[in-house]
Image (tube, rainbow, N blue to C red; front, side, top):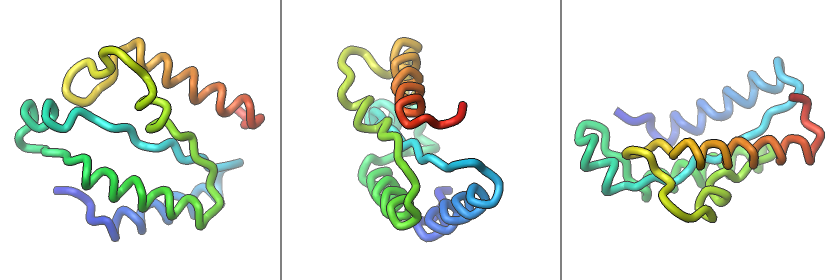
Length: 115
């Protein structure tokens, strides 16, 4: 069972509230796309649909904007990669994982985030 969009929004806001109390800073890393057909064929008990994922993605962007939370756009970065990205039905290959990690690290370093 999925979390409703309303519960997702409430959960994100709670995470932000906790972060404001306990963290030096909070950053949102966007979710990435997946191969819907491949995933749903291999995982019939846990279907994922990009249309639904996009709704949740947009809601997260809205909440982050209202709360002035910076966003690491891993989604757009990953969409710009070429080649065989997915190792199975949803997980990225090790090569892609390393590229994503480098992207996140560079984003943090450019903005002087404490690591």
